[in-house]
Image (tube, rainbow, N blue to C red; front, side):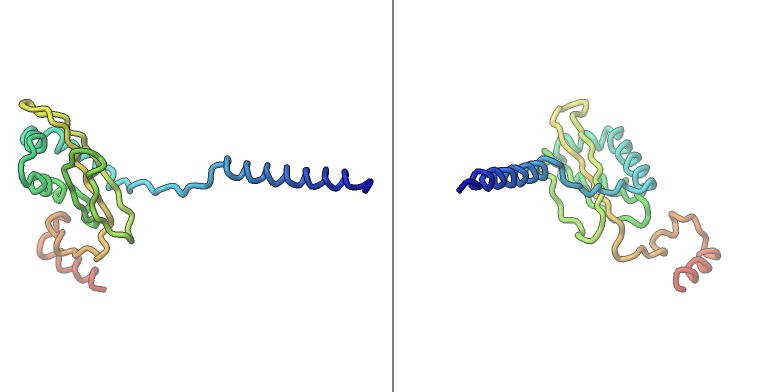
Length: 164
């Protein structure tokens, strides 16, 4: 019975060490995996597309006045200026919570937003959000012939390289 106090003190010390370990593991932040930055070519394209939409007054007024099908007016700008091996989708939304789109699960998805607050006539803020991801199907080089600036003679030699 004399050593009973020693056992109790030992148990108290063990409990204190366990509590300190538990508290320190809950307070120390866990390692969060950093999301990759968009490739440089995509960053430049996203910035350019945003500026094209932002400074086009007819698009701005169509976005703010909720013109039906305004996404179809935005789409050609995106197609002309996006990197050739990326797919995209876009939406015009009232708030960030309503801008949800299905995107591929097996690809890195990069988002570009523009906040359009008003046009010359009305003030009705909207968010234009564009999602980009690397093309999963593999790009068809014939589809981008004009982008590459090739003529028919050099195109046939490039096409042979893609077929190998």
